[in-house]
Length: 100
Image (cartoon, rainbow, N blue to C red):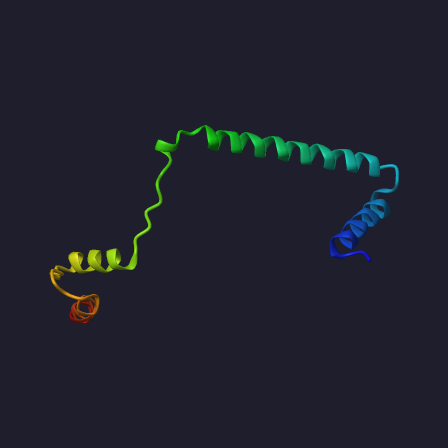
């Protein structure tokens, strides 16, 4: 049984044949093949260019964990964090923000 993609391709081919006639179909297929080849070539060039960049010069992702974000926020608001629990720091941040 034919699936969705097969029917789509059959429909496109039928529309091309109806609109431009069967004489133009080989030209259309050739242009489509050239476009696919060009896309593949450019895609390979891009991949090669990305892989040619040394690993050291690639930007490293900066992912912060929740505790680091909490501590940075407290520091930016001028809240001391020594000896406090996460909950205590969160409460102080909330109070400081509502006051501002």
